[in-house]
Image 1 (tube, rainbow, N blue to C red):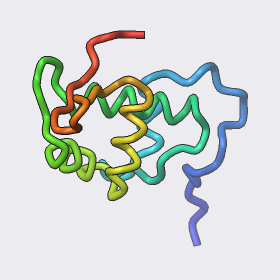
Image 2: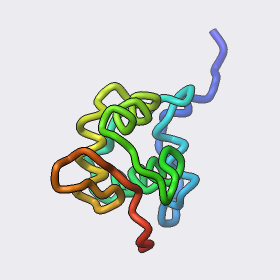
Image 3: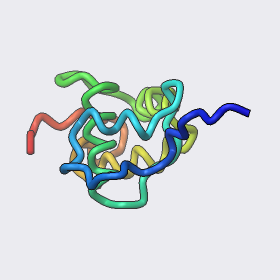
Length: 105
């Protein structure tokens, strides 16, 4: 049995504040392993998803939003809700049109 390094271990030294590229650790083969429970970590993920899955200045229907989110995780409705509540996606009052927010943080 070889002693391959287990990539699931935490780093030995305290890591500096997580940056955008650190969301890569949340994915395996392009799929999100789990929606982070920690708010700050989830927020990083949501920013990444908004920036990579949705174009600015384009309207999306709910099925289109769900389809885009399903490419990374099966629980598209939870991700959609998080994106809306975090303000990264906006939705018309009737819920028919979604847009990526243009406000930056």
